[in-house]
Image (cartoon, rainbow over all chains, first blue to last red; front, side, top):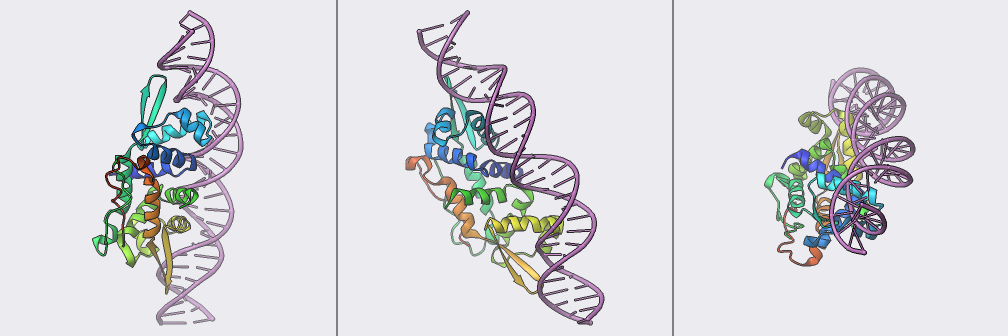
Amino acid sequence: MESVVVVKALAALAQSSRLEIFRSLVVAGGTGLTPSVLAESLGIAPNTLSFHLKELVHADLVSQERIGRNLIYRAQYDRMNAVLGYLTQNCCQGQACLIEAASRCDC
Amino acid sequence: MESVVVVKALAALAQSSRLEIFRSLVVAGGTGLTPSVLAESLGIAPNTLSFHLKELVHADLVSQERIGRNLIYRAQYDRMNAVLGYLTQNCCQGQACLIEAASRCDC
DNA sequence: TCATTATTTCAAGTATTATGGAAATATAGA
DNA sequence: TCTATATTTCCATAATACTTGAAATAATGA
């Protein structure tokens, strides 16, 4: 995974509204959530929410699917996992690491 | 772990120079690295490097120790792991998750 | 103490980002 | 087609962040 992509993903998550949005989507799982639901539950104005969702989609951390009048946003678990993995890669030059495992989601 | 702390940590990592610095420190492990070494190996001006290191220290992702004329910076693995864990917490409402493990470093 | 090396702080300029209001687009149903 | 709902886009403003050059601080050794 390229460092530029990782920076983009981290930047997308490094903002309180977006982190909340992403966390909501992670918890929601495969069902996903609509902007309306997110806007209401998080108390974010629809245009601001749209801006942040776009940011997350551009970072490939979230996917978008239209179903009728609604849009469904979902967390992209594989991309999230790749970003997490990047941070620990080659940790301690491979030595002294007891585990290389935890906090990955395989939904 | 509080969301504010996580945002701060993610913001600290969401910048190409800092991500490189942090990755170098993660790879270096317990030995740590001095600003001189980092500045040379990454090609970052010393004052710019200092700015970014401070950012990482403030986010608690990196620790600082003085040894004689040199400062030694080290990755804070526990904090990094906590941040990674935050992102996957309660993933998919607990259902359908095969593993809750990977990409954590236990140096 | 003085000079040197290591590192940080300060100030300033530019660029990027977040937010809000208003308007535009898309879809569905009457 | 008309209307309502859902969502996005556009624009302007305010705040924040990155980088650079110059100066300051810290620690060591001569």
